[in-house]
Image (cartoon, rainbow, N blue to C red; front, side, top):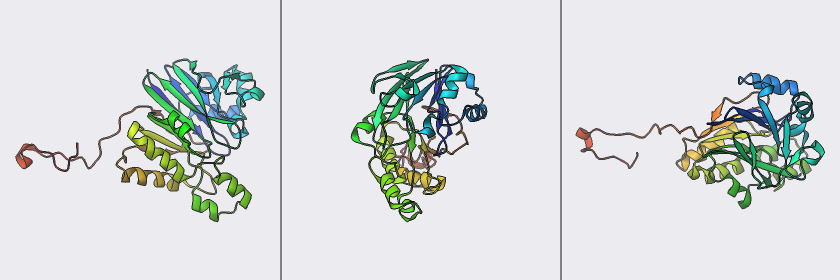
Length: 277
């Protein structure tokens, strides 16, 4: 059995992540039309019929707009936490309660945002991942849910300097930067740095602002810091609107660092130099 995923689309125009284990697929959020989700799934070799359930993080339309049509067309099950699922007619799952969907265990955990919002931890055997695409800060409670995962889809909404100098009204800037707004590149970096020693291998930066961020800015900020603290092997990608990420196999081993030299017996008497392994 294996756990794998692709972020189908991410951004204010719509969010959906396809996760698969043991031949059973589900969506985390469905903020695009049914036809658009079908087309995006086709680009990773999957069909709408492969979707067995939808897990909903929160009620904003860029995460929910396609759910009703998926239910009408496919009869998929929809799961959400209290305060999120009622208006969608979803089956309610309490925060921290383990939900079994096919070969996957799913758990909702609350995160700070300007509406009732949850991250989702997904596990298959020893493999685990988290999806958390809308949160104002990663509190100690949130970090406990993230610790130990091998893959993460994490918000990196804005570059703080770009947001401050950008065209948004002052009140909107304050909301975005608040503890109930959206994570900045720097905040995402701090999360990654804290999780890196605990097995993180793949990080997908999500919900990037078109106005206040860029893929190069977001990934560059995170990777430079990870490299500085000795975790440059972690694979960092940015999710885009309307462009599925390549399949990510949760738990795939990291490549050996390019700078890990070994010397032959004749050169050093069998000793390692610099302590690299």
